[in-house]
Amino acid sequence: LAQKTNQTIDELKEYLDTLHAKVQLRPTAAPTLNPTTDPTKSPTADPTKSPTTGPTATTEIPTTDPTKDPTLAPTTTWVEGLTLGGSDNSYDSVVIDLGQYDFNAEFQGSEYHVIKRECATCGDEYKEIYYKRILNADTFDAYEYMRRWREDLDNRNELDFKIYTSIQ
Image (cartoon, rainbow, N blue to C red):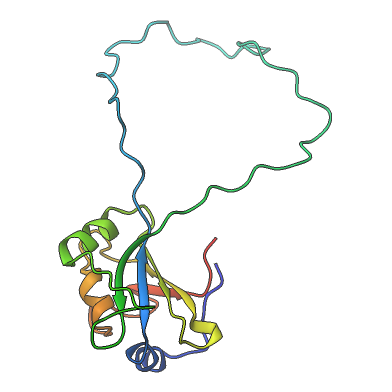
């Protein structure tokens, strides 16, 4: 990840207060449709007592030529959670607000605890930034902090969170 380091948090806070932005959350993994059964209570075979000299299972012979077209990385789907701006909190004439409970549930239940912020009216460096929560991500009130940006005892840059300009 490329980290934005040449702005102080006060400059960033002042800048964020002037934004019209859309905040998005990374979703959790899809639910499992068929839960697994109870684990096996006893093994079905005795463990190997000493190492073997060759493979214990049939193996495929690898190809000699490498794959010419690598597979693409998995895509990320973002949940649109909140728009900020104007007196009606619209962004591009759209108002989105999951509400505090649902926004926090999405954020706290997400795998990486990252919030993507898009801002069409921001300078090029700030059009898209990522807020990565480090501490207390499972209990942090992300909704309230995104609505009214503030740095305080539980929202300190480089300790409680980090801001990035890209995500990989």
